[in-house]
Amino acid sequence: MTAVESRPAGVLTEGPGHRPFGARAKAFFALTKPRVIELLLLTTVPVMFLAAQGVPPLWLVVATCVGGFMSAGGAGAFNMYLDRDIDRLMGRTSQRPLVTGMVSPRECLVFAYTLAVASTVWFWVLVNPLSAMLSLGALLFYVVVYTMWLKRRTAQNIVWGGIAGCMPVFIGWSSVTNSLSWAAVVLFLVIFFWTPPHYWPLSMKVREDYERVGVPMLPVVVGNKAVAGQIVLYSWVMVGVSLLLWPLGYTGWFYPAAALVLGVLWLKEAYALRARARAGLTGAKLKEMRLFHWSITYASLLFVAVAVDPFLR
Image 1 (cartoon, rainbow, N blue to C red):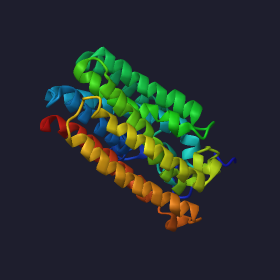
Image 2: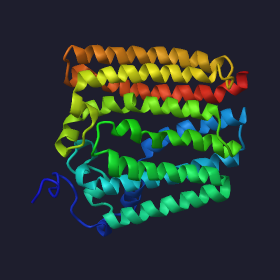
Image 3: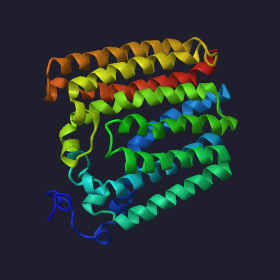
Image 4: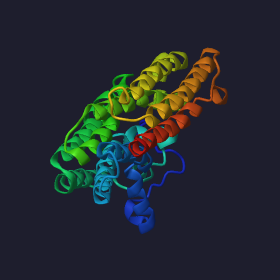
């Protein structure tokens, strides 16, 4: 038996048909990676407020969120199908539905295709064709470019693969205006430069997992010190880009003030992580997850500021 064929202790071996309906429903929901979807919708809805310069139609917000959930959920299900061989060997992913046997690979694939098709049709009919194409493009980029090509081949996987996670900004803007703008491009770039310093601390935490399965995440390839230096570099660029909305005339005073304060707090955490990495600290003393958790708070508050700003102009 190969390492990939082995099953960790405690993993279920019975077929999916032996599982209660509630547990099965929960497993299918888990295939969509709901925590990731929360972040994606968090960048979609505030951009709709900025695009509308106020409150967008409620039905449009709901339609965009439902379509976004289905599209991102389909991408997540495809990802779990393609990564099921390495998921069983990593502690962080060893309880995913395909590993435990709660959902079969075939069921997962059918579920993924169903969500992908349904989300595209949903956006096309209820929102607009541009949003439908952007949504489908994001799904294909995440599945084909990131999961199938970049993830297991290059340490820059998160950098370029993160483009898929930037697309909800375009989708939110286009759902309101049926077009794109420089404001959407700026916020797209904010998420682009946010993604690596958001994810690299987590990959530092589970570095041994990635090393075991041969995925070349940056901490595996260059070590924590170099990664921490890259985090500081990307952080500076991210903060700088986040301030561009104001001089371009898309916001009033509130957003840049919030972006500046949040950016200073982010840089403080990034430099603290770099100092700990340079000191050779490891394990609990490295405290890499401090920046990971703060990054989620940062993105949440920054995009809340995006939504609030139109009401204070």
